[in-house]
Length: 340
Image (tube, rainbow, N blue to C red; front, side, top):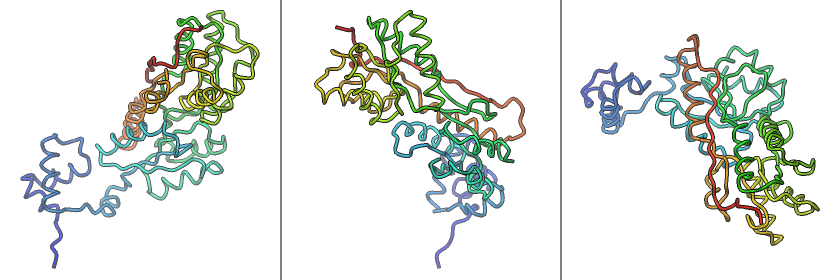
C-alpha cells in the first residue's frame, strides 16, 4: 500500500512546524526566502500534494484569477500575462485565461466565474466591452474584485493600470519632427477603442502645437492588426501628397505597413519613416528594426496582479490604489530617419 505524505511529513523533513508549512504553501510572501526553500525541498522529498479542493473549501477561495483578453492570438499580451502570472504565483494563486469574444453579449457570463468560485478576481484587458456588460459588472457584488489593465472604461469606477498613452503619442510626433519631418501621417487603432482615441487625440494635438500641416486623409483608420497596416500602406501609396513619416498606433500596424511598402518597392526609412507603439518582442528583429514607443508590459501585468491581490486579501482596506499610470520610453531603431 502506497503511503500518502502528509503536512506533518513535510514539517518533519523541513524541521519547521506544520503551521509554518501551511503558511508557506498558502501564502509564500509571509515567510522568509530560506523557509520557502526548505519547505519546497521537503515537499519534493516527501512527494506531498496539496489537496486544493479541501484548501479552497477551507479558505473560501479559488486561489485563481481570471484574465480576459480581446484576442488570444495577439503577441502584445504575452508579457502582460507573464507579469500577472509571476506575481500571482508568489501568492500561491494561478491564472485562468479567456477571450472576451465569448462574453460580449452578457456580463452575467463574467459574473458566473466569480459566483461559481472559479476565480477570486478578474483582470480585463479589453476596453471595448459592451456598455450593458459594463453596467452588469458595476452592479455585481464582486465589482471590487474586477480590475482593468492596459485598456480601461471611461467613466466606469473600476481600478486600472495603463501606460502614458498621450505622452507616448506626443513623443512619437516629436521624434519624427526632430528628424526633420514636417508632413506626418497617423494610422489609428480600431474605432471606439479607448487607446485609439487617446493616441489619436494626442497625435492631432501635438501636430497642431508644432504648427504642422495635417490633411484629413493623413489620419488613416486602422485596427491594430497587420492587415490594417497593409491597407494603410496602400492608402499612403495612393496619395498624391505623401507624408514623409507615419506614426502607427501599434507595432503590428507598423509591420503590416512596412511589409506592404516592400511589396511595392518602397524603402523604409529612405522613402518614408515608419514607427509603432508597444515595442513588442518582434520589433527589434523586424526588417528594418522598428522604432517604437515602449510600454513596460511586464510591469503592467505585475502591477495589475498586485493591485487585484490587495483587493482580494483585504477587500475592505482603505486607500487602495485606484489607478496606476506607468511611464513610456522611446526606442529608436532603423525604421526612422531624416527625410530625403
